[in-house]
Length: 410
Image 1 (spheres, helix red, strand yellow):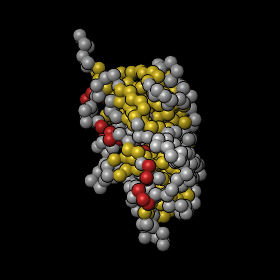
Image 2 (cartoon, one colour):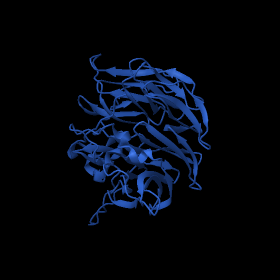
Image 3 (cartoon, one colour):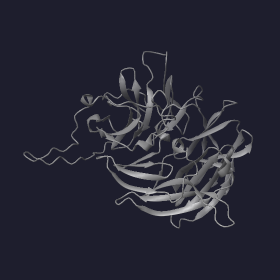
Image 4 (cartoon, one colour):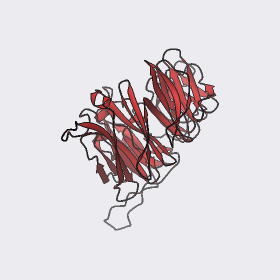
């Protein structure tokens, strides 16, 4: 599936709406007003006059010649949590106050990065209760008769000041991780006290379950590229014949396989809701929604969406987009809710940049737009920016290859 979420540019500062969330300084006082972010769920618009830059590492090696982020915002190494951004790099994580732009916390991995050229492959951290988990691929030096090796170092940073590491743990990687030219690590998700981490290199993969209370390794599943965590399961693709993996679900607590689907040629899998994954094939054009608890078919995806990347809006809708169209699907029933395609009708599909809590944000023919995720109707309020990431406090916008957070308005 091709990437569907692209970069969105912000408006000029004087185009932004006035906001009531900025308190005024007292009359006659020379002290600057304290910046305060007010939550709006979902945001109606974004205030470019109060933009805050994020660390440059958030977009290092991420943009193409057109100034767009490859893969869209969901692959940026940034997690938004309340009024903070957790920005990961191959060797550390920074905590940024989104109201002021100040770095209020920072932790680094204790080992050296496994690959010096891995900047563009860092994925976002994940939230685990009152902690944010960031995995790092690092080396262990040769010592005595022991050769150099590679490990995953998982660092848990508190979500409250002073934003320090609450705990760390390391997991030894298989030898193929040292041989592979491109290795990526992802914190897939956390549920019921188990964090799932996946490492992929070429045709190899391995997934781990880590106890977030004892910080011990619960299980190892060679060959599994985990994609989603939910309903007590880790769901992913298990290596089988060349280019024909199996969709599988494993128990979060034990790592034991609970179900296995039929092998799928050139398979791709992505999360499609709290209890659903989407499995598509580059060969047979199969495109299905599976129940993560048992692997059973929920529904076939509507026809014509096989080339579209889809993103769950963290509410109830799966939004699918590519450069010439956008559509919305109910992830439980597979029902096509609405679609906009280039060359059909008076409306032109926007370039989708982010979806969140019932809103689709993007750039239309007349500038930034927001749509209702369930109906596809235009939201009357102009959002003023097309953000790549959104939460109730900010929208994160790419402007001249740099990420900025804009305060949310509503």
